[in-house]
Length: 322
Image (cartoon, rainbow, N blue to C red; front, top):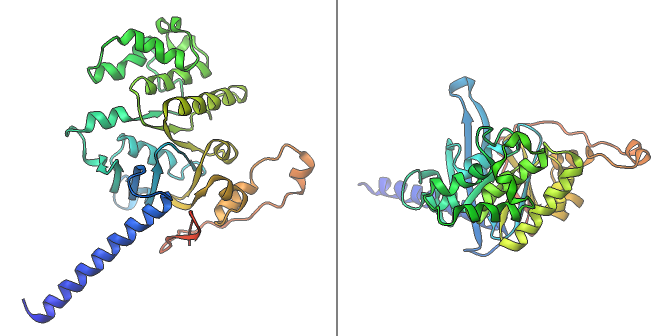
């Protein structure tokens, strides 16, 4: 190799190393924690539906980390990529590019490799529609027991099903009923019990209360909070209701057009939003006082492609796309 070629190769290697280092620093910093305390790390995640000029780009290079024991709220309008992110994390979708690291392992490449079964036990999901996510031909007991049966962990299974039902505030007698015999709130509790029976460490909650009556939403939110404290759970709470996310989350990540536009402590993001889209979301939240609502000045936001923009730390732990 000539001297010039050697110098060029060395420079390219240094540039690649610097880029990787910058990525690692950004993801680590956005988690606000020391090394080893992040249960989940998402790096440069991209996902498209379809191919070629007809492709829909659902996610565009998003990176964030979830701390052990926290609730990270993921908010944004419909179509912003929230649910796609959650489904990639639990393995229902394969990303176009990027990585999802669970305790340091790239779970997008696990499939049937050693460790995949443990990941599927550790990371569970509660879906948005409590009716569509439950098999109408199976009893409640069979639905909850399906995960352990697949994992071939059937020791004292009936007792564990009853324990899971009791943990979510349902009578074990409901184990012999079918989903159509339950109310919407009860069905969502069954979905939560199905996730809990595998003793997970991280639960992805994909708009778990949006399909429920307002009178039931508070009950489910309080249940999730109690379970988190009792079992030491970590939540990724996906929703479009910023007021609810503020109530339940330690940190909030805001998504728009497949990009992560703001990430920071929940109260700070709500009280001091830095990105125009976050300000627009907050200004659109309804106020219970009609007079105050009438006098509010909605924040106008103009969509843009965010091309070339990167997350930058504007204050300790508060990151904004700019």
